[in-house]
Length: 216
Image (tube, rainbow, N blue to C red; front, side, top):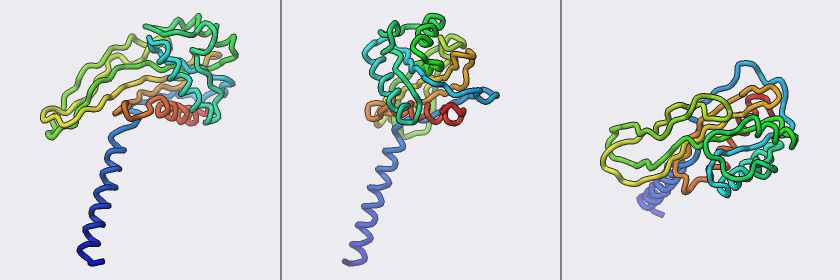
């Protein structure tokens, strides 16, 4: 094989691999904000319920089941909240924490992971680096009945649109039902959700936060 042909093949392979890396980096889930209580966790939960606040019952159940399965593989005894008696169906607005806590305790859960969809939309790939922020939604203060975030924005680059991807933001927190304490909270950004298993990715981030907090 001649040197020029070898260099041409090497260059083609390098471009292909680099392209695959760049495509991989453009999708997926990352944590864009995180908080953890100052005091370390006093105890590990025996059973954790996963609740995703979505109005569509089937979508909510499917996501909770997928997330619970990932957490179980990570050594966390997790159960989908929608599979518990009295907690099925969609959730619109805030959670009735008093009622939900009673149901969870009857099932033996002493911890709950709650995820709120905080907004999202189309994001484009652009030529020029001109940025603008687009308002995505508003939270309602704090408490595990409601999201903590107040205003959520997505950042876009303007002009010369090439292609669009769908981005979504989810706020997730863990609450100890025995102490009533919020232990940690994260905000995740998932890009290109049409080609990303967001439930699995977010559950992976949750498992990591549980480990950092000494809860698994």
